[in-house]
Picture (tube, rainbow over the protein chains, first blue to last red):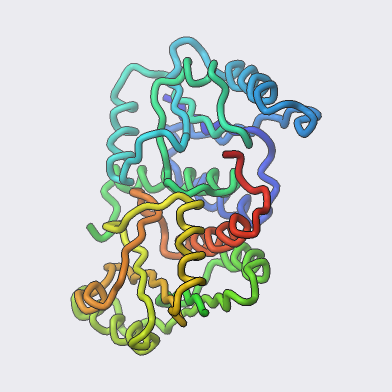
Length: 157
Length: 157
C-alpha cells in the first residue's frame, strides 16, 4: 500500500522542512509514505477563489486513480485521537486498497469536485493552523500512528 | 494584562525554537505575552508519575497568584476555533484579570491540585502532539488571535 500526503505549493519554511525531514525516515518503509507537493497555480492571486479551487482540483485529481481512497484534511471533518487514527491506518493496511491519498486543501479549501470524490474527511483541530504547519502536524501523526502500531511506548494513556 | 504560557522543561528542538521566535515579536506588546519554561524536575525518570505530577504542580503553583486566571491545555478540555479563542482573549483584555496563566502539563499531565486550581480547560486537538510542538502550536494561536482582533486578513472564512 501507498500513503500520499498531497498538498499545493512547496514547503518554504526551512524549519518546517527540517522537522518534516526528521520524521520521514522514521515512518515504516512498507507504508510507502510520500509527501507530494504539487506546483502552485500560476497567477493564483488574480483568480477568484472558486476558479482557483477548480484549478487545484484538476491537479489533485491527476494524482488520483479510480481505486484510490481519498481522505480530506478538512475543518468539517471528524476528529480522531492518535490511537483511533493509527487503527484507521491499520485497517487500510489490512484492506485491498492500494493507495490512500490524504489531501491538504489550498488557501480557500476544496472545490465541490474534490468533496464529491472524497471518501472521508478528517479534522485535526477546530483551530486554524498555517498550511505549512498542517503538513508537519500530519507527518508527525503518521509517524505516531506507526509507533502506536509497533507498540512503542509513546503516550501515557 | 499579562499572558503567560507556562511549561515544564526547555524547548530543546532548534527548529521549534526558531519557529516560536518568529511569532513572539509579532504578538502585541501590551499583551505582555511570555513563554515561561520551568526547570525539569530532577530524577524525573525515577519518580512515580503521581509524585512527578505533584512536584511539577509545586512549580506551576509558584507562578500563580490568587487573582490569576489558570487555563489548562488538556485533552479533556473544550475546543475552540481560532476565532472563538480570539474572542476569549478579547474578553480577558476587557476584564479586570491581571494575569492569565496557560499551562502545558508534563509527560503525565496535571496533578489533582492543578485541576482544582484551574478555571478552564482548553483542548487543541483530539490528537496527541509532542510537548514541544504544543508550545509552537499555541504560540501561533496567540499570534493568530492578535491578527484576528486587529482585523488583519488571515483566514478565508
